[in-house]
Amino acid sequence: MQRTASAHWQGGLKDGRGTVTTASGVLSQTQYSFATRFEDGVGTNPEELIAAAHAGCFSMALSAQLDGVGLKAEAIDTKAALTMEKTDAGFTITKIHLELRAHIPNADDAKFQKAAAEAKAGCPVSRLLNAHITLDAKLV
Image (cartoon, rainbow, N blue to C red; front, side, top):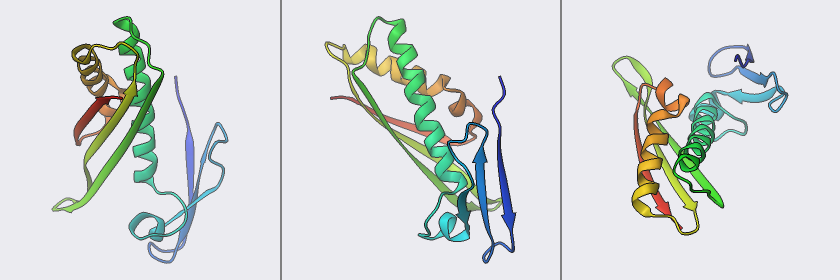
């Protein structure tokens, strides 16, 4: 399996701007810039896209883990909060905190917590990232 996306950039770091496009067309020349990355500009940025990918990947991984123990969620809502800090090596994604709220009728909390921990460890995006990943998982 291979997925593709592309980026186009024009200009310098602070005065330039770019677009990102995915092969699926979901993102099509979506604007990004210094302002959208480091300030409050309108558009997206690489870190936001990584956070979205991690939240989506984790949610699907959790669904698979729940299937394995005979549970089915009515709702899985995951928020990924990515932290990027300036380190000696330069700007680095240092951590991502996953906040999970799941509605699973008649779920045993111990089974749920185990499934959530296994999803966090096994999600392909989690395995890709060289960052500290934390999880707050609650049944609602």
